[in-house]
Image 1 (cartoon, one colour):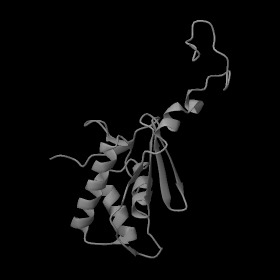
Image 2 (cartoon, helix red, strand yellow; image 1 turned 90 degrees about the vertical axis):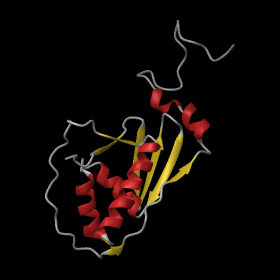
Image 3 (cartoon, helix red, strand yellow; image 1 turned 60 degrees about the horizontal axis):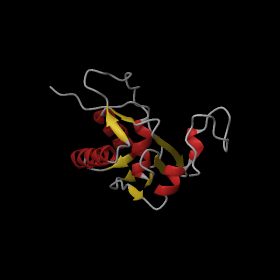
Length: 154
């Protein structure tokens, strides 16, 4: 019997923030950024909880109304899309995440389940790849080139 995979966010190459119900995700290695709102942002939040697909599905079904088999299929498609964009990856088989916590009762409004969308943007790729912020050393930026380092001036 194969267990459902547990997906993890590909850190440190993937940075993210949830802002007003929208997930903003940046792939620092490729220079692409993404957005996912509503259902997609909720699924992105679930990824940080080390849940297998069944655990994620249980939490989605607490919050959204939908047919479980259809929601499972859509969830799997969304996770595969995130994986194809190199934003998440399944944990290697045999490597287990921490036990998922018990489901807590959800007291909010149950919303209709909608297919999560991942919007990809490439317009800032050159700037994100040139951004030195993630390559700053203890001297800060901008800094002068040290002996033995390559100079940008030819």
